[in-house]
Image (cartoon, rainbow, N blue to C red; front, side):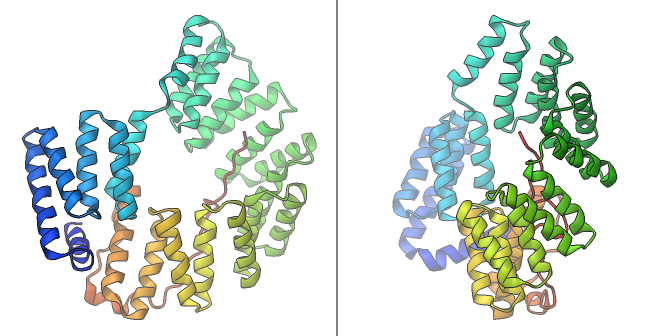
Length: 404
């Protein structure tokens, strides 16, 4: 990782800086680092600010000042500096992590949290305020806290299917599919007409590979609600895994007939078109998705992959750039595939940088190195024969299988 940071720093120095300005900025940053170690935070902020004034595009200066603000509890100022560092260097992983940490500390406005918390204090025997606060935490992706509140609510009202349903969704979001299945099973026993519960029960079964059971629950979902569009999306996934492409398309078509705005049906249909080498149809579908949701990273990435597979390499590069720079700077596969293209062009320095970025993000997500750190002189012969994979082709990870 140190070598990667050094490589990026030298690149920035060569391209963006005049020697005198860069020298001043670097000196201020070094002084600021020493002041932080000495716990002289205000002086450190002043030095980072001087570095920024000397060179406006110093991402590391904004990052450093943001860290100091975070330590001082100046969370809004910290968030602004981490965001500025990311704007300058979109693949600045540490800045992304610190920004997320800062947002977590900022949390929701106190009045929104306090309003819900005080409702519990005012009426502790009423389960609904617990559910309300649980849903609030759930939207903040604090699933563990949400689950505990749903459990508290169930202790007060053990047979309430609405509370059970929310608990099941919490389990589903955390990947606890067995717990989700048992919870949704209780819901449909109490309320057999609860279509969302039947659907989510089917999803939890599907996630565990219980295909026959999942199909039964999907059919029950449609018995209760014949217009439940997402049920056909899951039917399509089942057909896709069996490589029955035409039947999968037919299921996605049914979903879209019921709901023309069902983005996931369109997304999965685009994958099948690509597998059938109907690339123009696949491109059209993904473009339609981006018209509805310009931030749909998987659709944008798959457009790049289709251009890559069909040897329209400049267009592929354009879309990988769009994913990495504008949609999701932590989308590791975009860096990997872009590294392949740089390799083919003979630009080994940029290829090396992209492969290391891919490695860095993968390790951050999984805690493991992806395989090997590549040396620059090895890159030219690497990856030339590999074909990029469509996002969602091997797994249905791009599909949100939940419904609230």
